[in-house]
Length: 305
Image (cartoon, rainbow, N blue to C red; front, side, top):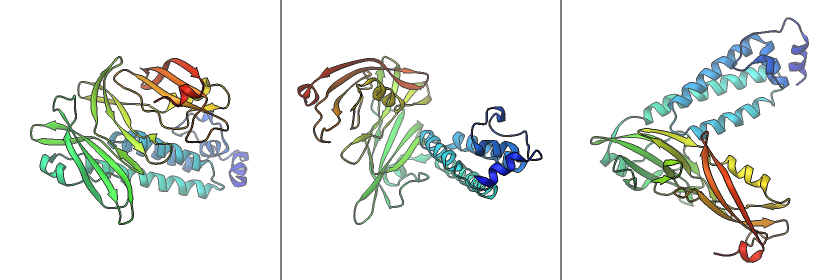
């Protein structure tokens, strides 16, 4: 950070444009961007490329996560050249991703969807096969889905899911994601207290069996992705110190309820003993939120089926 700090000390190093408010710059790197005209312009170009990719992608949550990781890595730049190179690479990645997603959005026929994997950007590298194709239950035949597996001779490396909207005899992808070590299930439309929801179930392999699915609020043909992760952070804050939900929680989205065993320090991963949490959930401002939390203490509650 020495060279970045040195630039900040020089009065001539000052710029006005950046994708964020320079008056609120909070880190050495952010101040360096605001202080250097070339970097400030690169930041603007990156922001434009990100907006273009966000408009193109059918997996916005994955793109937002990638962008957050890049922003964190940007803070590790030690020189202005490092920072400039990081921007150049990220802009190129975002523009390439935009082009890839535009090709994914093309209409295809049902026969093709049954036999050929939709090519999803950033999917696992192994060959893809179609595991299942069918109508999305509860959609009134307006939506269809394709489930994918990525495999090599040794193991299954990941899975993918595509949701299509029907237009006559043709299908247009509206949701598409592929992830390492994840198995997706058949999407389903459910009516909930928050309105009509599209549940795209997914599970990450491992002892935690974590929820890797996604959830969308449906309003006519519009589908808005719901944040189904941040409520877990809120749950952790509400539990007694040393307690936690160590494995995946799979809510009942039709009822907007969830239950989970609770572990405490010293418990084995197999065997929770602290108790059980029962939750009533809601959807507010695009997020799944906790409306009510009830905890029953003890090993018997934790280990009940």
